[in-house]
View: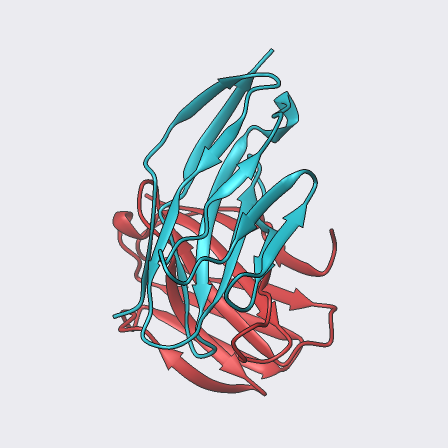
Amino acid sequence: ETGVTQTPRHLVMGMTNKKSLKCEQHLGHNAMYWYKQSAKKPLELMFVYNFKEQTENNSVPSRFSPECPNSSHLFLHLHTLQPEDSALYLCASSQDQTRGDTQYFGPGTRLTVL
Amino acid sequence: GDSVTQMEGPVTLSEEAFLTINCTYTATGYPSLFWYVQYPGEGLQLLLKATKADDKGSNKGFEATYRKETTSFHLEKGSVQVSDSAVYFCALSTGNQFYFGTGTSLTVIP
């Protein structure tokens, strides 16, 4: 499945580092999403972009900063993270944000904050 | 608010056993309902979906029926295989938001 790709697949960073996660979708979709997946917790929606405009920000700390330069690319910039931010970060895309649209997920970036 | 509740895991079954994973939802409108599957080290993949009441989604031998009267979307498979071992997520969409359950881990032993 190469519809949604994410890089890097694994990332280890210290609390003072700055890094970025990249997501690219090859499906011609208009909406893109960042989720956080932690053990034994539901997927947490972080950000939503539709036609490059941010439509949702679910009270995410400012140490996470999204960027959507076009409908195919989505970044998550990370700085001054905490160990509790260690998780699997998943990117997804959908045609639009209508009720029946399926979200297609990338493989995720496994982030470890030391 | 809108939400999804699915049965706690983990679930362990022998090969060829019957599988049911329960999912119920709460929604103010008319959501679409989904089942996603996550294999180890991978992202979520759509397994099946239903967009209106009484619709049945099916794929790879899995089925689920959108029951508005019981607000349920239970996942079933008549005969599981070892390759079905994964984590299964029930989800609903109202358009603006997607809500996922906590996931149910399934292990199928030979």
